[in-house]
Image 1: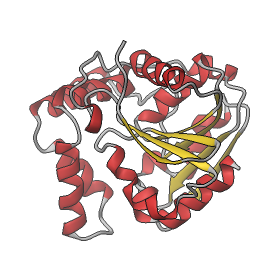
Image 2: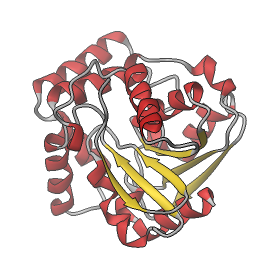
Image 3: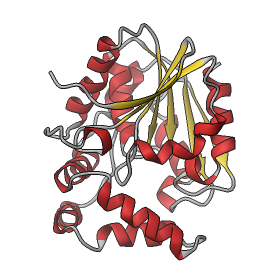
Image 4: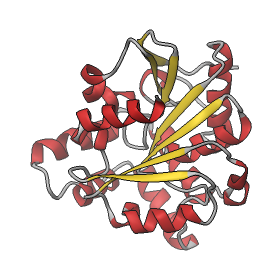
Length: 251
């Protein structure tokens, strides 16, 4: 059994796990560190297989594998309760963890993907995965389309992060995960509170009306808040707001 690597901050009684997105790793959360309540909370910033601190860990990069990795880490750390926060791609993993581990007490989903994944026609899906495997231009295209408000320094930073935070095998695998995985009919069994945070300036697929439509049919207890000055990265774009809202929800 492998153990995911993480960065631990704080020594409080309440525990929050942080999971990252496709084109980043636990460093995406560095901007919030000065604003965290380290007295009341303990924070674990976790890297999935093939990413960041866990870059040397190989796997199949599936939703089931990743969710079991998180479950095993909770057991290894001997934790009784965990608030689980996930961003974008890993929000699917977080929802699966909530289904297989009753130690998860709350879900916080940042710019999320529902348990149905992202639906595309097979030809378009295959083309996108192939483009990621080619390891050129796709990351640039995603960053450019999501960063129209910001300068070239930001774009360069996000492009570099996209290439250096993970192995090509891992990011291709996790992209395949959210394009082909669907467990939407299981999520009615998630009976814990879910907080969803969106960025007002995010891509259309992540706007409030789209996310509300995806979630309201299947999820029992969820709330959506919108960070009005952020796009896809509220933890970087609005770190004080982000840290404050997470703390408020987990209290």
